[in-house]
Image (spheres, rainbow, N blue to C red):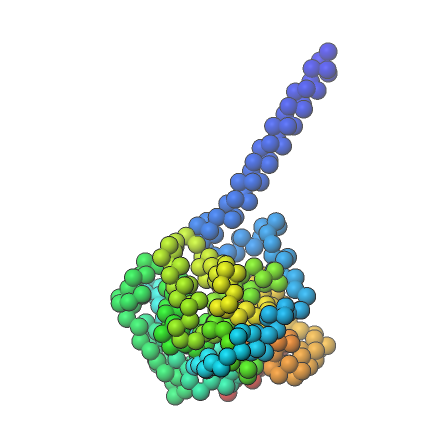
Length: 354
């Protein structure tokens, strides 16, 4: 009788333990997916450790552009009426972080990004929009004769209205205002131009963006090409009326994707490889910065030669994802390391060194 009575208690105890484990798992999953928690822990680092995320979808890409993406790349997507090309002026933003911990020093990686635009995009006009900038920085001094500085008072206009936001979010909104008023090409300072834009700036539609990830789940604002007065850009600006500081990339990645699906006649979208491949995943970042074997070095150089400075066919730029790559890789790079240490990233950007 003792054994017969013990069995049900064991089953009940096991069922309770299972329920507790399932409840803890669901709570942990929700915890990872809460934007406020991800920001609180200092970025998206732990978020990527979640084994049930869609990261494998982001990393999976068959390298086939859709018909619309290919037409966009060739500058033939639209109504075929004569329009002025998107201006070839490149805009950068720097130094919006204010107060304690503000960062105005213009460093080596930022220098390489601007230099890549001057060389690969063959841009004759480059503007650096700033609120704070160390104009005596060694790396800025090397560029000063080739760039135009545009000061933005952090207390006025949209910077004043968004002063409680993180610097990255203020830059998100400022870039849209610049493109709406002037048009041109916006680049984050961790984006590296790789090939001339050729016909793409003649696209019939007023804004061009690239998909992020092999699943094409978002359109990323780290590189945007747009004409002055773009309706799409103005709609995007209006979406910030309900902006929440608890969201990291909802307005910069998800909103433009949803808008593109709703207003497809206003935007030209490119395949993931155009600007944002490899992706932000840890595996892909390591792929770009890990040491190469002699065979891998030879293959990388061959690809760069085949694709006119890019690693892949139809790649125009590379986003280095500094939010995740800065501490382990980008922060320690020097001209000497780029010249002597063979990684895919280093070999790709060597031509931008003096």
